[in-house]
Image 1 (tube, rainbow, N blue to C red):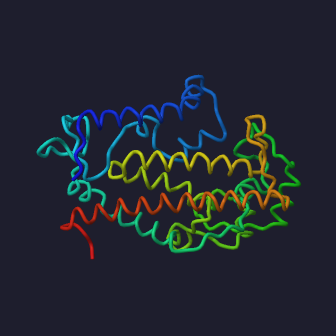
Image 2: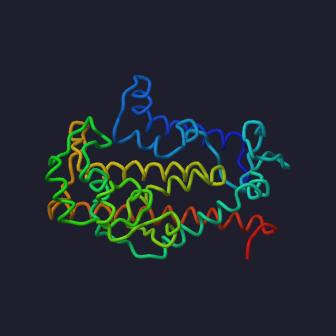
Image 3: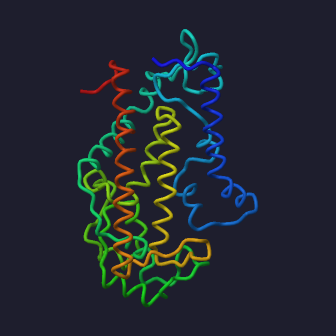
Length: 290
């Protein structure tokens, strides 16, 4: 096991908290004022990890924190020299979740990225309906032209948690009909939502996942969300999000290039999450499955 002195882990904890504070300063200020933000609120509404949880530091499995109080680290156990995450207790509660997440991540990583969707999932969420989610913000092209773009381009979405928000008229236009039961079979690393969801899988495994890795996933998710909304049918230019016009060849090329870059970054973090899971299984052989 790695042993961190009290001075070392407190410094890491404080650095982590300061990084989160800097990232969330604007969000928390808006929340205090009761202001909505159509892009960033998603990070704390669709995803259930609260700012305080993101701020809380954990070193991950196999790290002994010297001079630490077990009451300050739920799920940890006292050992000689400090406290450490209790892997046996963790896996007794979360083993099925760990296995499911590992299966999804491995399946996703095994496939080549598909880069031909051009963000049409967001357009399919406003297709041929009078009331849209972000009704305080205009559609860049207006409703009629937005519907026409969907008709012209079609929809190629492989992600169930995007597909389930499609309007009823848009669902038959998708080349796939994703379901929760087919999630592992369909997810692929080029999908923006699969990349954003790395954050979800990282925090769902917390405190097994080191907080630094959870924060790296959050940063990537925040960046991907910004692209997702720039390429959406909404006009968020007033908030500083210049549109990526996927209705044009130039916009589609810009979108695909960014999508590829995000897939590469996501691949690194996906591998890191799988290493955490594999090391956990290796560290608790009595509970390891064949």
